[in-house]
Figure 1 (cartoon, rainbow, N blue to C red):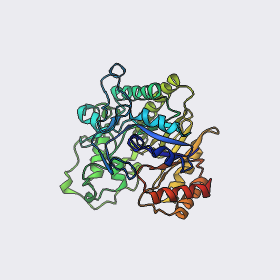
Figure 2: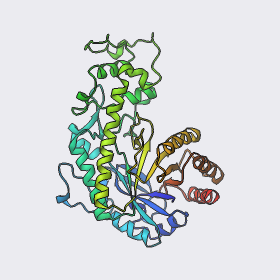
Figure 3: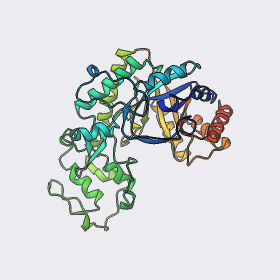
Figure 4: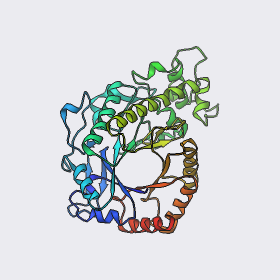
Length: 393
């Protein structure tokens, strides 16, 4: 099965959208039911070309009795039932509709509930990132899944951001690259030290993380003193090249705690899904890297409760293929593995290049392609994608 990802506003108000999507040669559409803020091109819509989505929204009717402390916001740029309208239009042309569900990535709820967001070792909050160490956050995600399955009645459920987000985020006018933080620094800045997370870690963890990011020597073992200020950075020792090296003897315990946050959330959501709609297949956006933070949550030991495991394939194809291979190794015999394929820049609008990428991912274990993004891509890109699919399927 191959899926094209779209937003509700790509379909609602555009009568030509369903046939255009069906012409791609896909079996299903991944339709956003819950999505974060964005600024999106709408190159085909008869009413507009750019749509500003200023806050995360839920694209089904919001029933107040269905929610607890955290209640999602509804959109004003589309009808309140935009998901339902788009679903019906897509199904009318024979396409399955899977509910693309973004979970812990929600700047609207994070800004309104700062006690529930991820905080790094310096105490800085990430308002876009709800931390699943809090029961209120887990309950919100459970209710989100239950509402989508009950009201939206999708043909499949796609779970994105099924765990804590971290440092990496395309924020408003992002200005962080000049700090020259390495990928290891980014992973360390992704560890959460909110009120629920901090007590779970071994005592020296925060101090060690701060010292590594600031390039200062950590205090002696057993010391609880703070590291030297960042202005006194030391360059005498080489910087760690892995998170394990940075955390030293603390690494195993911290990794177990970190992975446990995603595991607990994932297991509870799968249980809710099975109770609510037992025959609806579940797709997980996942990453075999235990230190992963973002839309593709860490899944270092697999998840037999899911039907499909999808890996991100937006980077170097060889690196992406290695990630897919590892995810395939973690899958059960009856699970499918998907490749989340980018059809936008910097990928070229070239069917030969795209087909070569698809073949690389298929050799690495992908049995289905998740195509991003059929609403944002130009006609030239959609044509290239259609040709590439025909060459590889």
